[in-house]
Length: 202
Image (cartoon, rainbow, N blue to C red; front, side, top):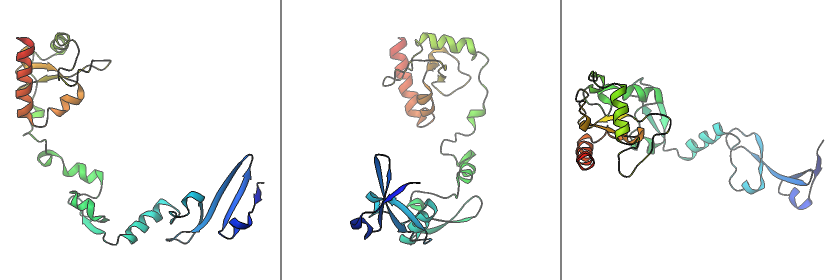
């Protein structure tokens, strides 16, 4: 059983210290402002401790900021109370599942008419991909990147976004990060990579 050491000066503040070996742990007893339960906190938190758990903290924040607004999910229609800042940020769904449903297909900002389902040309196989990687020295060809392939093979990108155009000038090695970035602002990336290929292969 731990031996309690009570200091008279601390006792007035509700402070109790326990002697555990060479170390003394000092804690203060507080009442939760939401549920009323007693809880112990460190002495350093005597000015910040207000609630006993995360659930009570959420209730306390909603009570403190009574400016909370109700959001009606555009997918399932559920009503959920959220902070106004989240609505200003463009939140329209109540959960990640509903958000994923809401951003499928044509509602996705990267939607390009379903071109991702088009088949590749017959020549675009493992042998051609490995040949392009070997030509590019297994390095991402974006100038500021220069990442070297290590383990997982780098993808081969079609510069003009035509999957059936498997000309070697139209194929380039990119790392996974930059290959995903080429899905945005395609006009810019097409011009940039075409100029890059002309400088490299001329």
